[in-house]
Amino acid sequence: MTDIALNFQVAVNERNYSTSSQLIDQALGEGTLPDLVLGLEEIEKAVSHITLERRDHIFSYLGMWDIYFAVQIPSINVLELLQKHDARNNAQTFMVDFIRDLIDRQDNRFDQFCVNIQTISRGQYAVLVPSILEQRTEELLSCKIQFKDETPRLYCTADLLGTYYGRKIITATHGNRSFDIVANEDQYGTIRKSLASTGLDTELMLMKIDSDKWDEYVKQRRSPRLHQSMRDDKVSQSDGSGELAVLHRVKSARSNIYSRNFNQQHTAFIAMNAARTQLCNDVLADIATDPSHSLRNRALKQLGESGDIHTLELLDDIMKNDGSTAIRKEASRAYSALASRTVGIGLISPAPSTKPPVVDISKINIILNSLLTKGMPTTMIDETLNSVALQGGSDSVEILLRLFSRPQENIRQAIVKATRLLDKQSAALIIRAALNDESQA
Image (cartoon, rainbow, N blue to C red; front, side, top):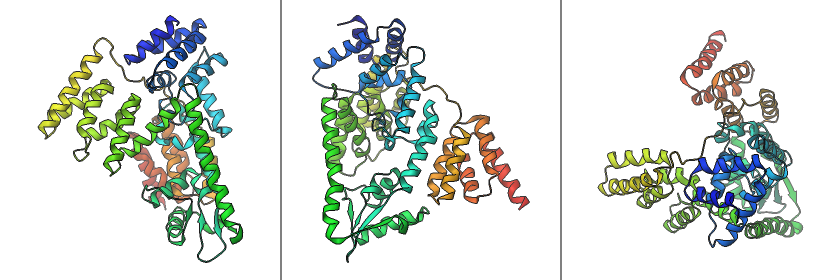
């Protein structure tokens, strides 16, 4: 076992991001990254319970916090990529380029369904926004909804579920309940209304399947989903770490923790705690401040274990101001536990990503032209312009002002809505331009 691997594991156990980052820097600079990788693999084979703690540190070092769930690569393999491509000079820049290539090739090692545009627009991965938006646009444009040529009609929504916006629409239609890829007339009617409300022509999306071929067609569409799920499970268990299996459970748990079903809440809470990742601190903090959530006390206790220096501020506020004596006591215990662990370590939360250059205006223009020409949903226009506004600064204001000169009314309305993401001074410039435009009309 190498010293650098042991020291790295100690830093991970102590949640000392500063030391773990220094050790990766050292390994890259001295060419000892293979030793670090080999040592971490040996450590992993010896443990009985896989967590996401190491992934937290490696992804924090590389500034990949905002795409944590989207990257379907175990953290040890990420280090191996740095080794393979000799990324010692600027590992963060290498990973940005590597991820961009995955998106362009639609490589399944990057799941764009897991990307929040507003979140990545604030960090170094903002440069990926145009590519992701373009992919989401094109997949919806090419989407087809098959129907059975027989009364009563049945509709296959497998293609629609394979798109980012389509999946959101169908999930909302079913109230986040489980559902089949086949929809009856009533179910499809609701889906059609949702699609039509976004500006899509649903008639152009329909594709007829002969009634005698319908059952076989649906069987084929279900099979890839089943086989893919089985393959994902096998990969998760045989990737040398089991890390992806834990990652998938935590991703689901972050949603299920808000379920109305207590058993689902409880199972989700256990999954998040077992993973020992600081990526769930935001969810735990949300629950800890929700007087109606049944797991509030347990969330406070867990924050005393997994929290960071910012969590101390939240716990301090709760123990001083909450109306429940029991909650104030629990917050006090969590505060004491967390404060005692942070002594001597300092800031133990992941370091923020470096500020990126502003989103490429030429690509944004291309995307907007495509959205307008093809009658795509206004929500996609909003998302595109929000990504610009979230960059902040004079560059974003200049871009939005230039876009405001476009004649399309929905573009202008979207720009005005995007100003809520700007500081007051910058937003005032946009609003002033809008008022001047109205006075000249």
